[in-house]
Every structure is written in structure tokens, then in C-alpha cells.
Image (cartoon, rainbow, N blue to C red):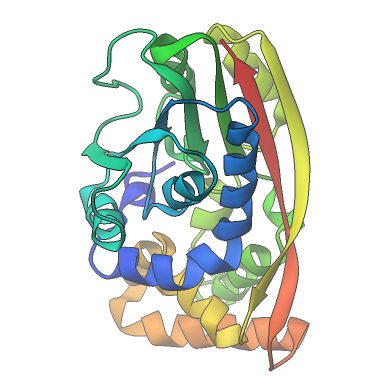
Length: 267
């Protein structure tokens, strides 16, 4: 991972929330919330909360108190603006150095965030530390990029736009931590021994190829990579991605495969 992979700044949080959340995140957030609901936790910590899709799903399914944290303040501020107050407490915090006492939470959840941790074992150790005995750490990660149609198509399209230096953010980071044996080993190293890993397939749907292209090219750190190569070519790159999606999936409403792994680890 490179430094720009964590830059959700400028207009990225709003575009991310508008396009990417319904495209690939909402269904998996509902799944994580349903898994949490099975143990009826009273106090839930979320790390890498982003724009709050998981926190909102948890509130809708569980009468719990939620502390939703993220290191990225622009994403957190966008989340808070969407749902201020109530049972969600929004707080800036580093998942690798959580400002909470030992054994404080019934559950810890993380929606597609651990891939961004610079030290995953350290992040897992922090989740283990703040969990009560018997508490669960529930999170998900994307499978390899070839199993996720839209991300794969956009990445290939941008490689044609910038052949000398292809933007590889999607393959490198969101889809770069999919080896289940490595995940299992990292969790074991952090102290988790009772865990399960499930593959979960879903469909990603959008009104048009252009919506998908805007989401990926302008609503994620992929935008930073594109603009680092040539800031004036952002719209060209977005159009190239939209054209590639249209060739593969059609010009109207489109849908493609998405696949993730869902991990539950018990303290």
C-alpha cells in the first residue's frame, strides 16, 4: 500500500457515499449487522467506519450503543452529517491505537477497512484487547479483483489510458488482502483462535456504466492516482472506464459479480 491509498479527501467522501455505497457496500453492511445481531451486543465499536454505512445498518437492526471511529476526518464528518446524534457516537480514532480501555466492547466490527491497516496484526490485537471475553470481532474483505467485475473492468480500462504507469489502487489495496490462510494466520498471531471465514457472493447494480465509472474513478483514492499521472485527464479516464463497462455489460442498467470474505473471530 502507498500513502495515497488512504486519502479520502476533497470531494471523494461525497462521491463515495453517493455512488460506491449503494454499488458495493450496502448489502455487505446489512450482512455484517445481521451477524452482529445474533449475539445482541449492547456496546459495539466500529473501526474504519468511512461514511457510516455499517453504523447505520447496525442501528436499524440492533438496539445497541455504537462508537463509530475512523482515522480519516473528512469521511467521519460526512458520516456524522448524515446521521448526527442518536445511538451512534462518531469519534476520530486510529484502529491500531484505540483510545478505549481493555475489554470494553461486546463486539468490534470493520466494514472493508482492514485492508488499509498499515499493520493488520496490530489492528487485530487492538480489537482483541478492547473486546470482552466471548465478544466477537466481525469484518469483511474483498476477494481478488478478478472475482469483482466492475473493479476489474475499471482497472483494465485505466491501464489502457496510462500504459506506462497503470493505476493499481483497486488491485493493490481493496482487493489485495484476500488470502484466507494469511488472514487466519494474522488473526491467530493477534490472539484469536476461534474464528470462521465465509465467502459471500452478491451482485453489484447501477443505473448506468457512467455511474460506476464516476464512483470508482472519482469517489475512491483511485482518483488520486489518476490525477498524479495527469490531473487534466480525470474526465478522460472516467469516460474510458465507462466505455469499457458499457462494452462488457451494456449501456443501460448494469450489474456484475462482487465477492467478499466475512470473518468472525471470538475473543
